Length: 117
Length: 113
Image (cartoon, rainbow over all chains, first blue to last red; front, side):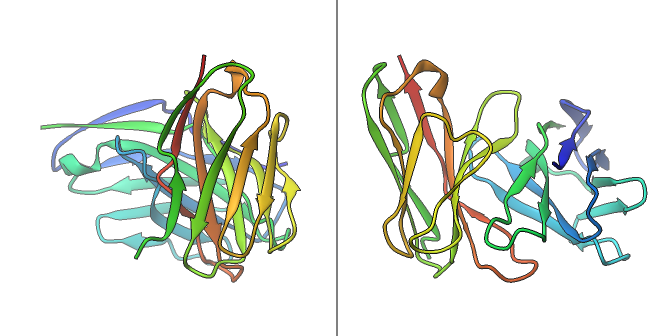
């Protein structure tokens, strides 16, 4: 079974600075997807960014980018120019491609990000 | 532009009471999921449904039942609620193609006294 580990329960960053959230995972599969979800106090689960394991190029979405290291099984999220609206719980998630119909997400325990004005 | 709709948003139950959480999606997705979120933990899969008429157990199915009523609706039932089922429940859906992500509802906060 796959596992996802987020070793930083809490992080804080000064507004306009850059912060990196860590995520490692364990799998024996070669093809899979990785995601970062944001959960603000409103409780919504919002997709931030996704990465296909077969792609070597790191995904980017505006101020959000990832550092995907497949051999090291590491998938960190970098937030540039941090804004107050980035304050939230961030979850790293893994999805297998091998179980058609049950492409369930395996989540890490989350990192609570605080933005300091 | 509703996406995934969950009802109710909040509920308080007494131990032993029964309750059904409703979920509906309007995106024509095949797969639907129920997760629970507990403090200090990520979301954990309770049940999923790959298509209308099929359901399967996830990681933490004990104490729950589900019904995939049609393609749009996937309900979660607690037959005899226990305090250990106090949690936030999320429904999600997904189209079964490649890189498409799961779309989540806004969650139901359920407290069992």
